[in-house]
Length: 125
Image 1 (cartoon, one colour):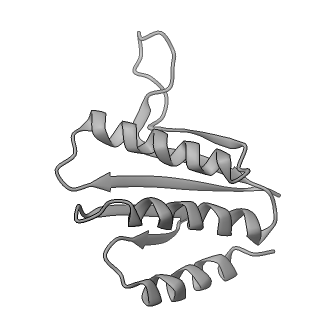
Image 2 (cartoon, rainbow, N blue to C red):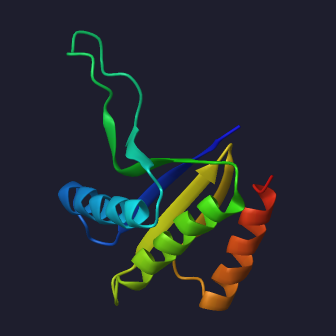
């Protein structure tokens, strides 16, 4: 069984184009860490009468992992690195696996470590 992680990100004051650009940067970082299956998160099927493409969710990624906790740890490490590059701009990231949500934003590094460890342990085989 493989897990999928829904990633939603945001940045204070950013428009849809900027958030889409940021999602692209995060996607590249995930691929560089060996996560091969990273796609735009879709909002569902396109409206009736349209060309039939799924509508992408701005700032959303769908990451497919193997069964190891290391894959999830790689995703979380890339996300935390992305958060830290925001400088003084507030960034948020929401990770979701089967309805279980981890949201990282302004938590201290120590608190993030605790939250990440708990989240990863709940989703380890």
